[in-house]
Structure formats: C-alpha cells, structure tokens
Length: 480
Image 1 (tube, rainbow, N blue to C red):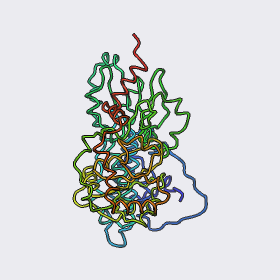
Image 2: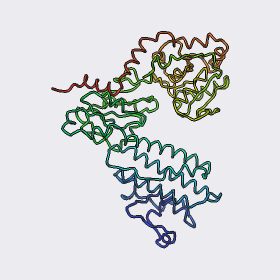
Image 3: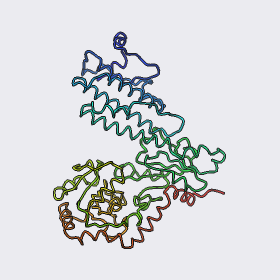
Image 4: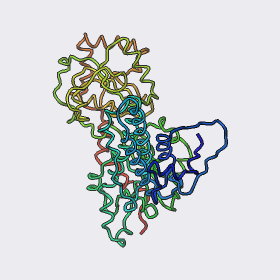
C-alpha cells in the first residue's frame, strides 16, 4: 500500500479529527497508518504503481542517535495504546482494539531492542511508558491478537529486563570511582554485551589485583581485553568495531554452535585471541557441570519408593537434535508426563519457584527425559545434571562423548544406544519390573567418583573470569 499520506495531508480533515503534528516527534507510518486507517471514512486500494516511498531524514529509522530513536518509539507506542483505548470491547470494535494493541507491542519490542543495545552509562534514561498496561487489558483482546501480543510482550519485557540488569550491575560504580591516574595502571576487562543471567558479585570479590571489570562500552578504546558474548552480539553491533593494537578479544559462548552457524566462520579465529566456552579445548573452559559436587547429590534416596515413571519439561522450539520426532515416537510406546510446552499434557502443582520446583518435580519420577536441543561434542547441559541433583535417572540424548562428563558409570540411560524409540521403551518397562536393573543407576552415588571428573570440576572452583585474569597474566605478562 503506497504511503501517500506520508507526504500529503488535508488540513481541514486533520482539524476535524483533532489531529496535529507534535513538535520534535517524528511520525513514521507505524503511528499514522493506524490512526488514518481507523478514522478514514473510505479507503481506496490500488494496484497501480503511481506512488513511491522516500525515506526522510526526520524518520525514526534514519535517526543515528539510538537514545532518541528508542525514546520516540516508546512515545509512538504509548500513543497507539491511547488510540486503542478509544474503542470498546463490543464485537464490532474488539478486533480493531486488539490489533492496535498488537501493533503497539510490536513497536515496544523494537524500542526495547534498541534500548538493550545501549551499553554506555549517562547517554540514555529509560522513559516512563505504558507497555505493561498490556497485562490488565489482556482479557479484553481477541484470541488471535492475544497470541501476537503475548509474543511481542514477552520479547520486549525480557529485553527491558536485560537492560535494567546491565544498568544496575555492580561493576561500573567501582570503575567510575577509580581515579584516572590509578586506572591507567590497571588492566580493564570490558564485557561488551552482558547476558542477563550473568552475576558479578562473587567475581568482584575474587578479582585479582591489577584488574578491573566493566560493562560500560565507553571503555572500549582503553580496555586491555574485551569479552564478547557471541549469541547476542548481533543485537549490539550497530557499526563496525576496530580492534586496537595489542588489545585481546575473547569469544564467550555457552550455546551450541549449530544454533548460531555463523560462529563456525573460520575468519573468527583470526579475529579473536581466546575462547571461553564449554568445549574441553577452550582456553577457559566453562562447563555446565561447574558446582556438581558429591555433597550436593549424595542425599539419602529410596529409588523404589518412586511411583511416577517418566516426565519431561521441554519448552524450547530448538530441535537440531531431532528430539521432537524421537519423543513423539517414544510416547507411542510408553506414557510420559510432559510439563513443558512440547507435547504438554500435565500441569505442575503449587507455585512455580523456578529451579527448586523443577528439582522437587523430578524427584517424584523414576526417569527424566534429558534431551539436548543439539547433538554436539562437549555440549552437555543442565538437562543432564538437574535430574542427577534430584536423585533420579536421566534418559539422555545429546553429546556423543557424554561419558567424559559423568562422575561415574551407569549414571544415565543413553537413548542413542537403542536402535529405535520402541526398543528404549521396552527397556524402560524392564526397569519398572526388575528392581536390580533400575537400582544399578544409583550405585555411582556411593562409589568413588571418576578422578578425571573430580579434577575437572575442581578447576571450576575459580570463576571463569578470575581464571581469565590469571591466563592473561601468563600469556600476556606486563612489560617491566
């Protein structure tokens, strides 16, 4: 549809409908399309190419200042919500009201994406906005529009929360308090794009002398080392970065490279100096078994008291391991209680307390489906270790070298050792009736653990960022 109204306006029509141009607020089609279409008495849609759309410097998409861009998008989304609230929930207007909300939440999502890429203190203040009003209006929206609204709200709220976590991080007040002369004698490690799940309080307590940690990108030029969290990096690169001579770049990743195939580009090896990830050959190994110690799992367990058979808790749509198809076939031959979005057939009781609720749920079952989203060497995640914490037996599909990541033998049932899901189901039925066959998966808890696993886990007593500092000292010692 040509954006004719982006250039021509009838003044009398604007005045009649109480519309005006607000000073200093650019109006892209996101706002005007909705308001004009809703108020117009008639629309004519032509398939003739008689108009063209030209980008104007005043448009939001062309504003170089990300702070201004985000602020304006928040304003436009707020205006759309106000416009939507003019309509009732009657059948004739509920559809219109609902889709206006969906469009507003889409714009909030765009604003939050920009906000989350701002990683310099003092250049932006998150404006007061009405995005969270969505939760109160939700019952009034149509089902189809609600699905879109939920999707955009969930994404936008997560991005906003990640920005707030960055904004309130404990690292940056410390570096800001250091005198410039003193700071020149320290090695600055900049975490270019911090993931929301990373905590820094314990790291700061153990950070070696001579190092300072920051999440503020204004230190990019003077940082000795820069850590890039690879999965979210594309959201934070609005322009090319130039690597300063002598600066050390570290690629940090806890996700399977099969999920982000661009990470396998060999040119990245020339760009980065060190790797910090879950692979055994990484410069700094960050495995999911960190903290998995005997004292946390050697609790008294009576496996034969477990009455429930199998459960799973899978909600992610990532399926590079083929787990969706495998589970669909497996469920034909043995019942599985599914508490996640995938093949959901069971609801959890009581309040959801996150990890604690998951462990309490797992403890009620003999077996837990522990299928990774990708089959990749060394990629062994909490999907395996959480059932072990809970005192149950994981049915595992994932890393081909998973035995290297287990504290003993017979800790898990490996799905890849059975020719078909049907054969696996037959074996599980055997475990239900033969106590000794099932109990063999608990012997490792009382036997000595594999020395190699104990040694590797002990390395994780030092946080990866602390180990990074020690490695930098060894590999790039300070010049006298």
